[in-house]
Image (cartoon, rainbow, N blue to C red; front, top):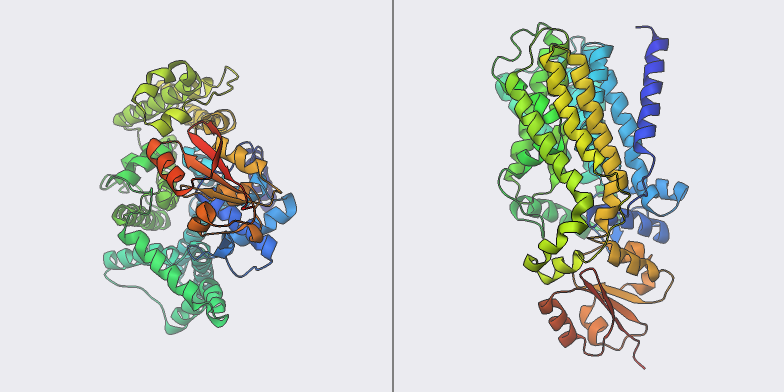
Length: 549
């Protein structure tokens, strides 16, 4: 294909990505914990002008390195402090990811395969959703994937002189992964590489110059911030960061436990329809008719990468859905390869694939279609819910009346997929499937998510927003980053001394947010006897303690 045509396709993909990922980034508030946590770090970096130290509540925060925070700082300086500024970097990441997948896909096979892979990734539920959020993982995963890809290119390059660039690029992107989220970025690659070496019986052509180059670039790109912290006298931050990473592997982080196969279930549901399309590729001898050695080689790396991610985070005690999101790259690749084989007539669609395809789509679509009618039957749930949940359910949504269609569209897409695949019209079958998934996730985020938020955090977000500009303290009886960000707190309003705020001689008003459960409110009243209740709303009680006269 001519360079002009390739450029045109890439410009078109970029335009489609911008149209999909950039609109409506501020339609719903940032969610606790992760989204608000990262956005607050960026806000405090802007306020303090300390671009080296990550802070939350104007205290050093050692859980994450600064790369994503720097991106959000730049975005917030362009668009202002808010939801759009916090989420814009991931919208950009979505566009870049589409272009990366297209170009890697066309180099592996051709333009058609590149487009198939890009479409499957973009139209799957969680991959699309993450590009509309303000969490770290889209950039983190992209850097790991690029680091792995360029290392694959290095191992396939025959000319030694041409190996130094892919070696350096691999190390650079893996270093950026470390600078984004920590050493697990390199750990995922290292485990994948180690399994590959075992399969290849530790046969790998490399020389000492390549090894030195790799680790030199990796150390610089991934480690310079840590070195700056140490040289700046902040060795304790570096030590706390390492201890935190170890603790995540060994224990369940607060509120983030889960059952053993948690990530497998989340990937099956969340990466629909790619997850179901990829299932047949896990069969033995699936590559027996694949004659392209480069494609076979890349496939082998992707299957190793997938299992490393899934097994690693199954072992990790802390269960958070985006921990396994790195698996989306290899999983969508395998789905794309299978779809291409079917469309080219090299393989036939396995009949059993249609069963989980329809099951996931119908169940998910039914749940989504039922949500807009929740206010009509929530009274059946309230008697069996605890006090806090019952309070949440007192909220009332403002549905437009057509939101249920998104769930119907998802289910209809799977049904059309079965109908047209039975007629051997595979291109239409896949087109309907992917289009229905894309319509579902985009409309659900725009129309359903803001209404669902009313049952969860909207009451407290609105309370915090009402305190913007007021010289006061705010304290919640549960872990939350929302008071800092949505009240736009300043350094002088910081206080981590709970006893002082509840019983001490405070110099300004202190507002308290308590989950409305009898045990919580009783304990709060005992510890804060002079607090005055303001009101109750949707499962939360709001109090104020005025400054000591």
